[in-house]
Image 1 (cartoon, rainbow, N blue to C red):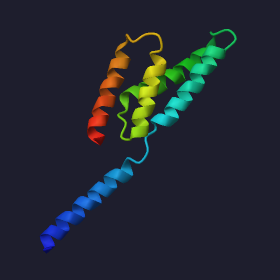
Image 2: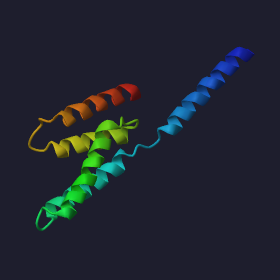
Image 3: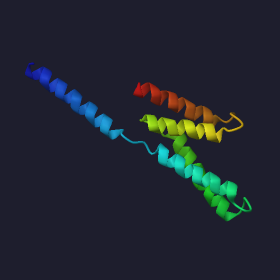
Image 4: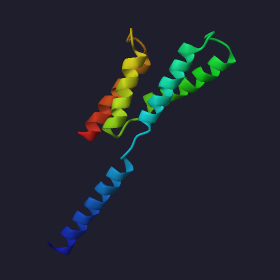
Length: 113
């Protein structure tokens, strides 16, 4: 192996290692767990309305925005997005958010494959 080949190989290996290390975890699983707790808190709330429910709903909505807008880089992240999609669309599949997150899942799968 000549010096040029060695340097090219070492650079490629270092770049690939850095990329893999940078994407060893996605936040999606933690977001999904928090989203479920907030969803259950809203569903279990005695009155289902008021300032407390509005605050819970605002946080839940923010998590949904991140789940939709953040492209997953791991299979675990993709799985969390699909699980959210399935749970949130339970009984219907009609809003644009579902279409958007599905498109992100497909792009992420293409990048991993």
